[in-house]
Amino acid sequence: ESFGWWRGVELRKIHNAEEWNELQHLLIMEALGGNALWTDRFLGYHVAIGYYWALNGLFLFSPQAAYNFMELLEAHAVDTYGTFLTENADRLQDLPPPTVAQKYYTSKDLYLFDDFQVSVPVGSRRPP
Image (tube, rainbow, N blue to C red; front, side, top):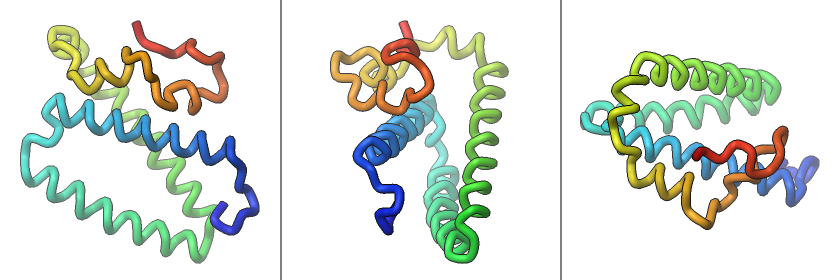
C-alpha cells in the first residue's frame, strides 16, 4: 500500500474505520478499569512500541509472515474478548455502559462505524 500498488480511496477509508473502531474498544476497556494499574499501562505502552518495531522488521523480510502473524494476533484478540464477555456477562449487565461507549454506538455521527462493515448491510450491526 505504501508503494501505491494497492492504494485506493475505499481501502484507505476501511483502514481508517478499523483503526477508529479499535481505538473505541480500547477506550471502552479503559473506562471499565482496564488501565487502573500503572504497571498495566507501562507494560502496554512499551510492549506496543517493541511489537511495532518487531513487526516492521519481520515485514522487511517477509510481508506474508507479518500479515499472517497479525491475523493470528487478531484471532487471539477475538477469543480474548469473547472469553472476557462470557466470564463477566452478569457483572457487565449490571454496569452502566461507559460514556465513551454510549457516544460511539448511539451518537448521530457514527463516524466511520458503517465503513468497516464490508460484509454486512450498512446499519445492520448497530447495537440497540
